[in-house]
Image (tube, rainbow, N blue to C red):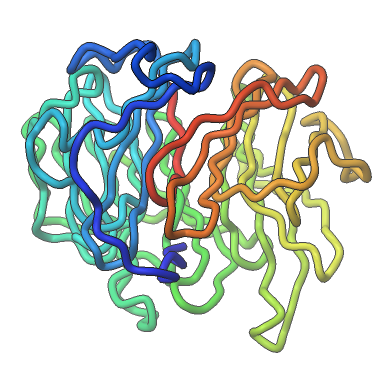
Length: 354
């Protein structure tokens, strides 16, 4: 969600390099321009309406940090509100929500390849199947009947004239190569479904009812689709708790575990047979075959706007006050200890391994 309207700041374009291990910037190794392989990419929404979205690079050894890499490489601003990034082969697709555009770059050099700036209306996330990219679009977030998936021909990186009409508030989207699964949070209201889309026919084949406001999707190697729903918030006047659902994609059968009415989890991650989620400033961990929710947090006292886990190492994006520089925090989940933290740009959210 784009809730970053606290203070409007202009972005100063240029290279920002910090070190996670030294206070002396002069000793920080600088990544060669265009060498963004073997590291982490972090998308930054930037301030809503200010056109200061950006992407940062952090090397896996945490010794090299470069902010605003799109502008550094292409001598141009990225755009307004970077919602998400997805990879297809050697390309990265950066979805810009307020700019209604997608910047396509070489994922390793970050040189611009193409820009799609027509046919999108409030785009959110993208996934790939059957040689095409599928982009969730809210349309007008207050209108329930104008939501759709835009289709990109990835061979030419152009938008197909065809769109796929879907129900209100399509958000995260994942693919198993032939089928797409779309979580519907509900735009400016609330929804409670996952749409199933056949990529060979570009048609919605079914919808699956899950918890209110599904916010995260994860596909595992056995064909299970995990859906975390945050529940309807208290301000709606009809608060509901979160729900963790497991969908067997062979037959769309579903089993679920309920959270308490006042618990609203998000940021579901799957890593090596373990599920992680974020709830009220804490990270919880559970086996993917568990039938009850954990009662004890792995980490607490956090303020994450984005999160992922890789090989029992947790990476959390802290947007701080949504006006000043954010941080990437790295935790060892074996010892549940902070490994390091890295200063980033304004409003970091998505974390991607490159």
